[in-house]
Image (tube, rainbow, N blue to C red; front, side, top):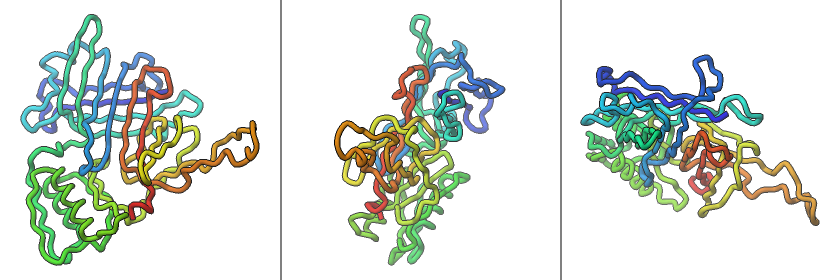
Length: 329
């Protein structure tokens, strides 16, 4: 069965803002499937900060009238944002459903909230970002990159100072050193990410070098440049794929999968080497089960799209764009 859990909480340290944490889920309190779960539509993104991407969107249909009143205002107050955690995937019920692939995909903030009431239909629309911090908000991002210091150390220090308590994960090349001190002040996370990506490409000018990228994941910040082996490898099964794998650009392919939470940017994935059936209508049928997407790919962007009540299999999916590792190293 399709699974989601959405938890909305007031800003940290402000439990008296007029509402207690709200939870919507397709599971009951004892873990069974909730046949009365509200219809949820979502469109969630995860990509590198230096790449353009829109904010995430969630619509919860059939919410209680009390949750649309002014006392339950979910819009930000100054720089204080309501937090939201979104879990998606599949729960037990269907033959090929894999509950182990379900989990947290968004641990973020609500930028805007809209309550709608038309006729006998109510809904709550949320514009969200995948982090508890707003990347385009002005903040003290001071980078003090010392001579002969590795760029990873400078990035980690900068992020830890501006966003204390947020983990910084990932590893980049140890050869990213500068010949003199580099001190910079950046208005927001977007500007800092663009600088880091550009300066890393200046140090390593190879055409196939990805450059250092920064992203938000459900576990915190991720820094990555494609030169260090990714410890996590996900083997995609044939039954997880919806439609066809597709080349969309040079060295870049796109795959549509049953919605799952274990796909994040920087993750290494491998697709099946063949399809489990052979077309025997013509000659050379023994070669027709091969696909042209052999090998391993690195996820460059993730998009979760779903409508929990729409019955077709194309309505609860995770779309990933991947690049060939050899093209980014």
